[in-house]
Image (cartoon, rainbow, N blue to C red):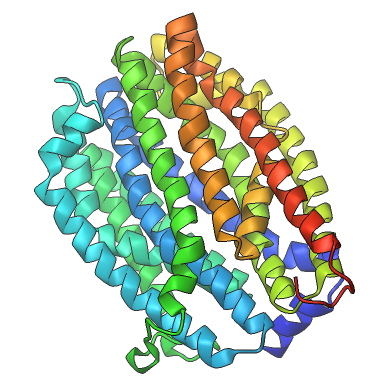
Length: 452
């Protein structure tokens, strides 16, 4: 813990950002590989309908991850601030609450999703050609829902106390298991989308097991003991105040993807498959920048809790510069390799043609999308629930969804394709305005160490 305290308080900012962000970025790279594996091996079946079915089902998988972020991001933010305030008992109460809360919620949601599968398939827009594939995939994903939620939550919780390397290892274990099982189950056993879902669930079980062993070996200053479980004393509300906006962001992303797929279905199953492949390819740009910015959230939270305003601002500025540089480089790579990336997943001429156009559209916001993620994680790290909620709701709800309908009506399929980058830029502007408003409020207070 002393090493983590030195990292949070004294290490040079570039070193502190690197030590926290690089493992998180590697974890996100692992997530990219993890998500690409299913689409890649399903694409090797040569069946665009199975690829389309997984694309349609992805928003439901994202809801499970969103519920993990309810406890993961909410808990990580609260824990890092508690550690900055030297309130160790509260940090243990928070981690125990997140442990049992994520497991309990996972069981409840999985049961509801399995019971309501027919309605879910209708809502996500599954066609007569894709509905059975989507049903197979989602049924097994739902059985593994509690493990998906727990693994997502505790990957974030470990970062909250500075254990970014251990969080990365857990992610890596889950991904390796998934990638090893994918070709065996999808192609070798001929299970297709069912095999992809089972491999995903087993990977999350493996990651969950690693996190449990980490705590049981007492390598953490946190706790998953039942005796430390509390909901009062602003434990539950402290997690929920940031966790709900963070979770809502993912849920709205899922809902936005459903709306996007429903708009695309009007033009056939092929654009749905192509957008699924394009978005998987674009994950390299998006998730690496999310990893950079999520990695520094504990630094923001700790220094906010410790009232070290100067260091907080140094972390923000340095990370912003890194985000723009990295976003620009990744965008250039994606533009050069766009055809190859689509062909890796599926060698269907029509899907490739649509996919290339969609990749180009998604890259329009690539150089600057990291600024949005930096603003989101800074606001969450500071524990500012209302601004976090406002930015979340606007980005995926009030901005993107209306744009899909408006641009679809005005420009047809092209409008649907370009709705995402348009929404990204509007959200970036909003995020910058909110952050500068918060920083201005901080600047009006006297003394760098005064509470803000």
